[in-house]
Image 1 (cartoon, protein in one colour):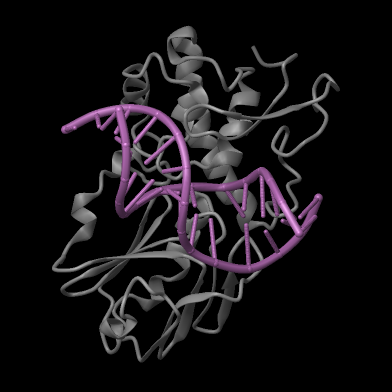
Image 2 (image 1 turned 90 degrees about the vertical axis):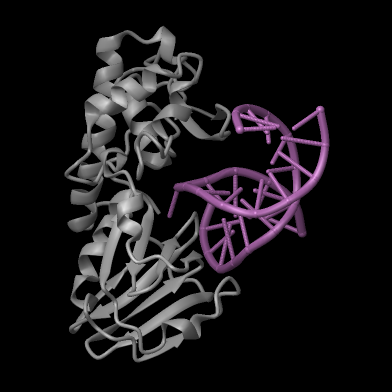
Length: 253
DNA sequence: ATCATTGTTATAGC
DNA sequence: CGCTATAACAATGA
């Protein structure tokens, strides 16, 4: 699940802020989930792909990883994740005004933490109003030897960007994922930052109108044939992170 | 049946 | 301390 979806979830869950958890269930081995029982939620926020529930004296960080999803019912409205529901219910909260079910996700408890939000740097969260393109541009240049494919997924620079977004952004800019930062001119580098940010928001908008799951907007991600030149698309693992990259060796240089 | 995947973290080893 | 490699997690669909 990529950052824009987590941002959406955060928005959907706002009616639970200030509400008490009436019942807790789920099979997470990481946490004794009964600590949440009868606790009141003080804040719900997202940072990149993190979803955070702040309580009075501790905080819970949820990460949906690759396979995680969720379902919720908030004041009569139903919401769900991008992918089909899995049988593994990690954690479920019941409130007077609805419930929140998280599946196949990784939980991390921050004990003795009254304000986890203050420890996050929101200038790198692409979905934050505080996102700073100029700062990202500078951070990228600090890693001249790194491959651009790794950098566009670097959560310390582009928190929230996932594999779909970075593949599309590279294609849009006609840049091969294996190009090193030092071999990309500054104008293009700046544009990559801009597009990584902008496409994250576009992703959010597409999701809102149900145009995400069918992949109708992807030009390169999981495609077989290049939408521009008609050539065969290459699928290979790139960079230190060895994530799946899709690219056209004719259109991207 | 095996393998890859919208992703990160813990651990070991150097 | 920092880097890298590897496993671990977890379910589904190709």
